[in-house]
Length: 563
Ligand code: SRM
Ligand code: SF4
Image 1 (cartoon, rainbow, N blue to C red):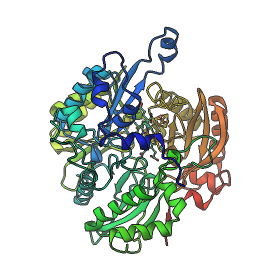
Image 2: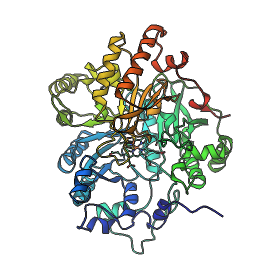
Image 3: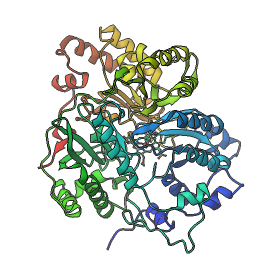
Image 4: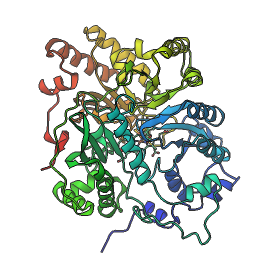
């Protein structure tokens, strides 16, 4: 007897290809919320229903319904926005949202706090700017990541194009999005489309894809369900090593869930990318767990089937055998800040956006400053998977004008912050994230300041340590790849994880459970003292912790190549 499928599976199956009763929910003026089943379906359209958790208790006491609002996330493969798109998104964020624009860890924009009555207008405004939100969330292939600067070299541009095309190729075919948000007429009969790749119940769980150009692993390719590592031979793109089964999410106290780094399963030529991607995706569609959502990601499907059987399944579906994986080497998984020159003499400026939040705050007027840049910029903007923004494709003689705006609006964190602050990531967490157990984005600036103080005390102020904070174990800031990471456990309390490398190829491990800031800083202070005294030349903090035996190494923590 087969187990019953999860409630989400039933909602998808009954949704008529993601329509559900969304139109009715939006029209219901009695509540700021949408119907329960529609909260599942709206994710596929790029939105989450949320409530302001800062106000939850107060509203409960006043017997008011929660302060419902909606987060909207874009599908921006590779994180590209033209200046006019930037201005349009800035304008819609100012008009409809509450906390500016937010750059996510997957090269997308998010806005928060959109009320139901303005949701449709906001969705339209995104689409008017030629930015859609379909499949930005939900059990489908999400926004495709790619090494962020496609104009760095012709090769980057080529890989970027593969990412964009694969994103299009794996889009759901349903017209529900266009009917609900853009008032497209439904084709008579309505049984028009079907989903040739996904089927009526889509995937068992979210599915994430990334392309990366070594030596920079700036997309954290091993954290993805499906990855393509560009292999360059004789200066040209020979193809890609394919990775499968990465993922970060876990649940406290549940050993059945864990972060896992991907396996490299072989090499494909560029023209085989679509076939292998479809094979991996449909294998997950057919073998993924549809009963228990916590065990439904591809990483668990692979653990259940075994990597050899999964690879054989992929090859059978793709209709070819993968070549043996080719050699690649990553140097680091962070961003490179400041100006860099591209292959064609054009320039690119990577700006540090702390925790990805683009708002005006005191002397750092990020939203106004980036708006001012967009008004004069003739290249484009690139969002990075580390929540930063590249002002890309600038002529040499335009650099000065951009620099003047950077100085005027206080956008110069990239030039003034410590290495720790530059590389640190934090997920959104409170007040919007329903799953947050502790602060992350709002805590990052203060916590970094305290750790910077400790580092300076040990003569380590310039140590480029990777710190990541997530408000819960779901791991949206990819914290299990931080040399130091805090995973929210309860307000003010975190699990302290230590010992990842800086190339995104080794996970960290739990060091201390459920401790507060004082204890965290105490532990770090001792470890920094050891690091300062005993580190080798150029040795990263995470690598030191492993070599020094403070963090036990284990093959299970590493990305692997399948036989
Ligand atoms: Fe995430 C759920 C925010 C990247 C793993 N994530 C959420 C939700 C939607 C909470 C919810 O389900 O109610 C968060 C909304 C917060 C808010 O108020 O905005 C949320 N995730 C984010 C973002 C905005 C974090 C950020 O600070 O940038 C990132 C949006 C990415 C995007 O543009 O698509 C974001 N989330 C990630 C990543 C990193 C990545 O993809 O490279 C991960 C870890 C990789 C992975 O998927 O394994 C991640 N998010 C999760 C999970 C755990 C999934 C799992 O396998 O268990 C959840 C919870 C869930 O799906 O049930 C989650
Ligand atoms: Fe929310 Fe947890 Fe993701 Fe942070 S890691 S955004 S708290 S789901």
